[in-house]
Length: 138
Image (cartoon, rainbow, N blue to C red):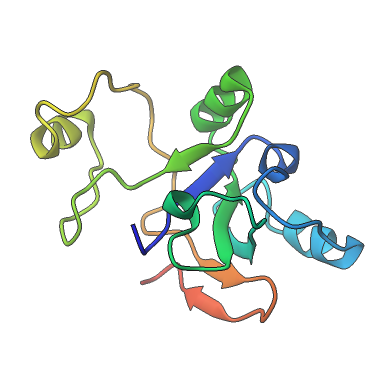
């Protein structure tokens, strides 16, 4: 719970309930990488649930370019929690079979579809400090 989670969205409007208002400069910086495989740490609104932001004052967010993930966000009408679908310390699940192996009785359903083209985790950068928290090669 202290780590926090990543939210994905079909567009930045779906993130507005969770982040503090952005400056025009910040919006332009985000637009350079979105939609796409880049996660940003943005200042969280005070009412953003702790189970989403963890022990942080920021929240990890991404406007996804993945067609299935974006369609799911559009269909639900809001941002969704994103995860690599693996228990801590285990390799990310890159197939539905591996997800079922990791969580044999804990899931109601798995949405099957093609994976994105990235071969590793997305980079994470802090918008306020511009510090790279995680590189794509990590």
